[in-house]
Image (cartoon, rainbow, N blue to C red; front, side):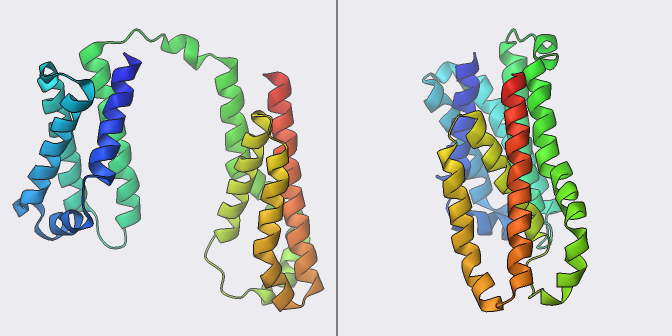
Amino acid sequence: MMLILIKLIFAHLLGDFVLQPRSWVQAKENNKLLSWRLYAHVLIHGLLVMVVLGSIHYWLLALAVMLLHFVVDVLKLYAQSEDTRTRWFIMDQSLHIIGLVAIWFLLFKPSIDLSTWFNSQSLWLYATALLFLTFVAGVVVQILMSRWTDTLNDLQDGSLAHAGRYIGMLERLFVFFFIVVGQWQAIGFLLGAKSVFRFGDLKESKNRQLTEYVLIGTLLSFAIAVATAMLVVYLS
């Protein structure tokens, strides 16, 4: 049963990102329900379902997927604007995947013991670790670095909004993943890559305070990720 769901997701990704030209996307956004490309795109998704499942007998499933795709795409076309394009892209893909899972569950009624999964220690252990590393650890680093942040405010050179926050999230997640899978050497590669990218900024700034600030922040972020990952591995 799980294989069918994987094939449905494969068909969706193929139809949305490989078999849909950029010109079709623009035509749908401009003409919306009047664009024939919208209906062709939906039809392609239905055909892909039967192709990946290898039988025309799945026509009812293909019809359900087509209806789902049509409704979600029309909702996105009429609701999104230039300012919300990124947000609606994420919502659009999320609704497609959730809808596919719902259709799969309703039509095939797989036997899944959600209570066992929901009460799994590993699930809550990893969920807690990921929540801590993405949101909580950033606040911890910010607070611990606050004594130096005000001093360096005048050195800001128009960096992207919240860029440092997301960089920190990603590097902690990478470190966590590398340790969980036992690839400690990859952490050295990650640290080296970040050093290469930051070298030009630090060299051009010619400011020892900024260099020390970045170094402390990076090492502190890495230390939190390493400690969290080691604790998760120990408790698993």
